[in-house]
Picture (cartoon, helix red, strand yellow):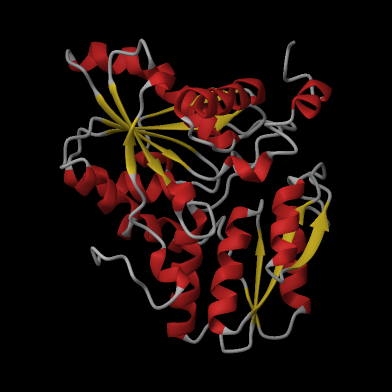
Length: 332
């Protein structure tokens, strides 16, 4: 990494995001908490890492050719990262996105020249017009299409094993007791977990899931439950997908939409850290496990969490009082 931070292209600036010690948002917790600020990647999210890794790997292997079209199902952040890579390599980008995604995300993608295929996010996963199934249709109908498949492609995990995990280990000088992060595709937490546990098997990894997702029951009870709607973007799933490495997780806690959004707002007001709902969920997860870790270790634990994307993508939702009240998520 150059100390001068001068690059030849935008994607070279992906990674080596700051690690910041939290203060007011963890006041009263008997622990040290550090947050990896992934919203400081060029396109504003942790997903820039997998976009760069997947596209460059596909080009090297000949799976994606110049002038081809990148097709992906995304809640928005991965789509933005892929749009960055498409611009750099002269590719086209066609993204399947739920209509329920925030207006800011959809506007950003259109500004980046992405062709959007909008789907109804309330459809069950087995429906042919649902999120992931629609992406497969688009791939079949698009000549020269490359489908990274971020939900099932373990290259997602590998990107974080090669970059995010080593960065955290180095930034913490190898002194870390736990990694707490929200779980969407599972690539981030799995890749980081694998790297950290290779350095120190005693590192605990705790995933934060959203109520309505199928992950928690699968992890804790090895059973499938019927998914339910939720509003946090980029967390959980309606089915078990290929990227989560559940065997690397030490525990999983489950949060509500209300709590995730409240903790995101808490970060904005107490730390001036402006993030999305999944980051609020990660902070809530730290609050849930801090005292237990203190008891288990018999000393003040050092916890790292990760804030995935920017609050600027949710001005019409999480940070809009009227929308929050309409959803029943904000009390006067």
